[in-house]
Image (cartoon, each protein chain N blue to C red):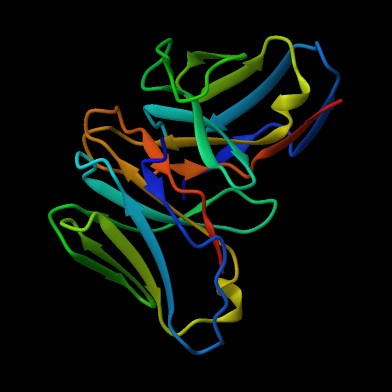
Amino acid sequence: DVKVTQSSRYLVKRTGEKVFLECVQDMDHENMFWYRQDPGLGLRLIYFSYDVKMKEKGDIPEGYSVSREKKERFSLILESASTNQTSMYLCASSLSSALNQPQHFGDGTRLSIL
Amino acid sequence: DQQVKQNSPSLSVQEGRISILNCDYTNSMFDYFLWYKKYPAEGPTFLISISSIKDKNEDGRFTVFLNKSAKHLSLHIVPSQPGDSAVYFCAASDPRGNEKLTFGTGTRL
């Protein structure tokens, strides 16, 4: 079974702080993704990566950056946290763009910015 | 611009009956469709998928139907069980998009 692990289930930070959310997958997947889930808006893609050191913007990248130094790890960075970034953050991974493989999700990090 | 739409925010079904969850899309380039199930405080779990070359895919109690001309897909759960209570998201993939998925807003069953 694919295991996607997010480092924190709950996180509380203050406005203006730099926040790091970490995600690790154990199945040697090429693709990794960061989403946020908000009521009534579904899952919205923030950034994704299809290879080490590669990244592409998703639909809502503003205020975020990412890092992928190793294949198994994908980090989401909030450069200067704001209250409108309070949300559930979900990391996902998938095997290969050639195979129409489903994405597998971690359990999420509920982030509150005070 | 919502390319994947789930117009029913919630649905109530009696145990043992059929649950039908609907999803519409606007992007004719989508060629792979998925359904995910999400319990509170957990990540979405992959349920079932269908490629655009098919019109039906079945896995146990779950069947997904795809109507390409209408740009519509549906998930049927028969028979419905209490453990099926969750939020269901449909998602679609554009082959030009590096495996990106576009999600609907979810239906709470």
